[in-house]
Image (cartoon, rainbow, N blue to C red; front, side, top):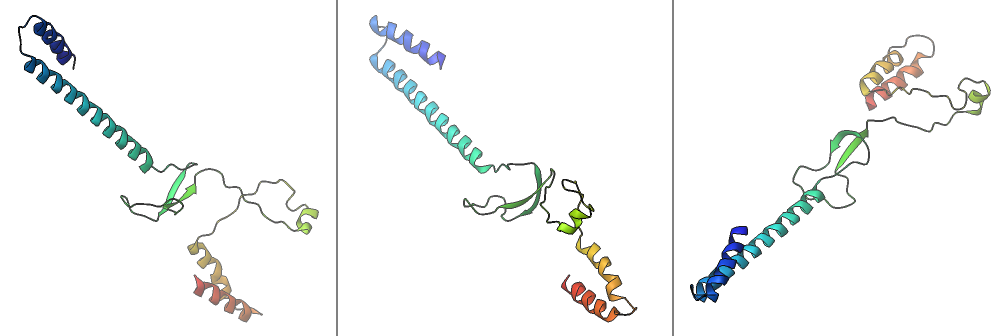
Length: 153
């Protein structure tokens, strides 16, 4: 680019002294303008691609892990539709209703931090086995309940 600008300056001096034709100067000037237009076109194309890239990245508002994807890579998405399910990697806070009796008996004092146990389906199967295999008095009730619960898993 600098070289072309120097050439234009030289040709301007040569034209003043009639050492070159105006056509050669005009050709150089048109080539320079065409080069400028190509540069501008490429800059605009680059800006467009950068905007497309920024709009194609989905950022989560919190740290987490992708649990399920609803769309495939390269698919078009519409605002408002779920594209994936994210599980939080941070602490999970849950509001739990506690009966008045438990509070009065101070089994769980207000403000106590508790650690919930999340059971998987496999753990639930093992938890239902004693109900299904029960043999004592009233076991008929438990076996039916256990069978229904196991059948639902």
